[in-house]
Length: 156
Image 1 (tube, rainbow, N blue to C red):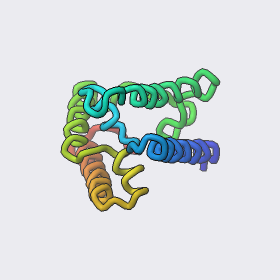
Image 2 (image 1 turned 45 degrees about the horizontal axis):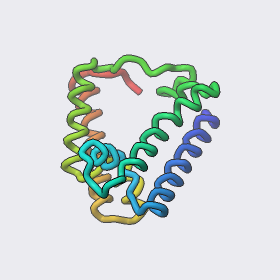
Image 3 (image 1 turned 90 degrees about the vertical axis):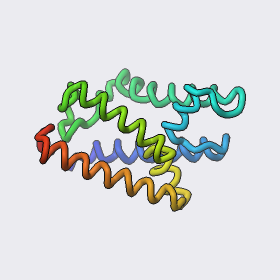
C-alpha cells in the first residue's frame, strides 16, 4: 500500500470538506461545481454573485498548479506514482460525447457529485442520497459496457 498516496487522498478529502463547509457557513451556498459553473455562465442568481463563483473555480484550478510548481507532480495516476495522465483511452470523440452526457446528467439530476455526493449526503438529504446512488450505478454500468462489451480501456 502506498501510504503517501493515501495521506494525500485524506488531505484532499479534508480540504474538500472544509471548503464545502466554509462556503455553506459563510455564503449559505452548496459547493456543487455544476451549479457554480452553470450559474456563472447563465448569470442567474443575485447581482454580484459571480465574484465568489470565479474565486471558487480559480481555487480549483490553481490548487493543483501550485502543488505541481512546488514539485508535487501530478499525483498517483492509476497506481503508477510516476505516471502522467495521457490521451483518452477511447479517443477524443468518445470523451466529448461522455462530457456532453455528464452535462445533460447534471441538468437532469439537478446537480453533480460534488453538490449531491459531498454536500447533500453530509446534510442527509434524501434527494442527494438517491442522486448519488444513481451516479454510482450509472458509473458501474458505464465501466462494464465500455470495458467488457466495447473493449475500451485496459484492465485496472
